[in-house]
Image (tube, rainbow over all chains, first blue to last red):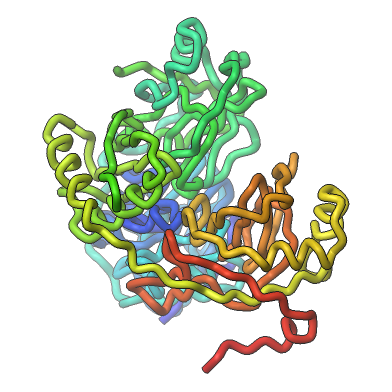
Length: 288
Length: 230
């Protein structure tokens, strides 16, 4: 049994909890950008919380099902329809054979997670189905979904109806704050520059993807006479480039880096970054 | 290993990871790979990734590090154990086609170095390299050192797409692209052999750190008709 993709969206990939234990080969962790949202989507269809699902970015997905199945959407808020009729996305959505499901308009946030009851039947690499587009591996043929793709399902049939708790429905917000601790090279920056980084707003630019987000802000004075040896890089690291701007590494980012890191966002705050839109303000709150 | 690896710095890298720096020594890189292999073989509780680099090893855990004092004696002990460690290394013969049709930067590199194509190929394939590291992207291999005359900077602007199998130079090293990806190294050739085999779950990478690599120049016809040995 398969789902046929009728509308691919600008960047829809298969993701799960990620590919761990392979960073020594240069393998980034990959996986859900917004972990709590992805887990919620899986829960709404009765899946294991870390089951593989579809991460939909910016523009919506459309699909047609060959057999009855249940789907759920969490994370970014989209208006959704089944056979042209609006449906409530705060609960499990049940589809009958031949039904067309469409995500019409993005309302809040950036990334939505579409879980399918029973999960997708895809081969794993390193124990994960996550797509790493930059390396062409995982997911469906190592790439973003395209119209006409057929996604094999592990099982079909309807799941019990579950509801999204109202406090977990994503709300519109234009200012984002994430907790972060000083980075491994923070001492290379002058104290005033460190205070600047933890006080000023950064704006997300158009240049952002699963590898990293380029930020725009009042430039941070780059350290003089810098000879840095590369070392292990984790998602959420704010690397400062010689022009004084910052790049935040994300789930598909490279495993080592050579730019000085001003700060590193706490692991349990990373999910907030997944829903920031270009132009919105991001503040780093110093936690340590 | 003549002298064990000595830890000399401990830098938090976010709330769930730490970068351990080691005292400089001639054996440091071997020691780092030894400790990395040891931690992969016998992981510490909650350890989800280990990232070796030239002078450090980064440990990534599944939860925030509550008290790193507990880790220090364990890691000191693991470093001590390396005294008797010998890596099992292999020597690889890798065919490379140094032809402009698969080496977009070949002409530029020859120009920059003031070398003929023949000299570049002869010198690049004369050296035995050591795999210093895999990383940055899956399977990308850093090989040291180039012939002393083959030394040049990275591209100012990285190429959008570098083909899998590309053999490239930057600084004093040669890099091998296991997968097609963007990249900033100057591409001077391409190998027809696959550098990753995902069907081999246990060891998908052709190279392991500290392995030796020799390049064998092949012509365009051989490259095109290359078939992996059955």
